[in-house]
Length: 235
Image 1 (tube, rainbow, N blue to C red):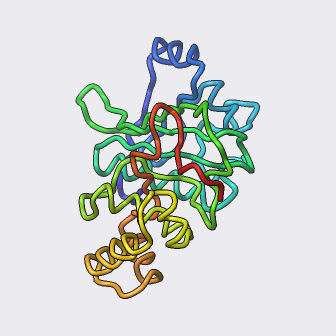
Image 2 (cartoon, helix red, strand yellow):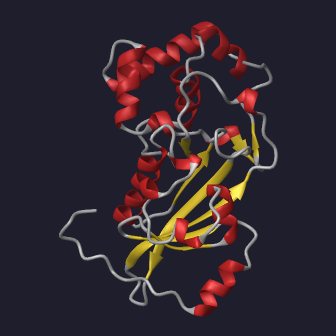
C-alpha cells in the first residue's frame, strides 16, 4: 500500500469473532496493508503457528511459517490482497504448498466492508480439496497459487486449456493425448495463440502470459466438484 494512504482501523464485533471462532474451516481478516487483524484456530493450523500473536498484527512476509517462506508465496498472497481491494471484487486461487501443507486448498478472498459499504480489508476463507492426485499436478515449475478467475477475456476458455498444458512444460504429443486431439490440432491452436499474442515462439508466449497473469489461471474444466482432473495419463 502507498505510504500516504490512511489505513482504516478494523474493530470486529464480539459476535463476528465468536462466529468465526466456531468455524472448522480457516477464516482470517486483513486490513488494507495486508496485516492480519483476525485469524481463527483453523487458519493458524494451516500456517503451523501456535499463538494468535504469531499472525495478528503481521504481514505475510513477517510471519514465521513454512507456508510463506518458499516460492515468493508471501509476496503473491499480498499481491492478491491488493488486487481484491483495488478492484473491489472477490477472487479464488488453488494453493499447492507441499513443503508446508500436505493437502491442496482453495482460498477465497472477498472485500471486507465497513458500515458504509467501503472496502477496508480482505476476508479470506479456505476450503480443503478432498480428492487430489499430486502426481497429476506436478510438472515443471508450477506456481504455488493458481487463479480460478480468468484474468480477462483475451483468450477463450478452450484456448486456456491448451496453453495451460504447454505453459507447464508438456510437449505437444502429451497435450494431444490428454485432450484427445491430434498433434496437428494442438500445433494449429498454438499458432493461433502466438498470432493473437503477437509473438513467435513458446518462450515469448510464456512472457506474454506471465505479464497478463494467464500463467496462473487454472481452466474451469480441470476443477469440478472438488476434484482436479488433468487427464488419465500420469506425468
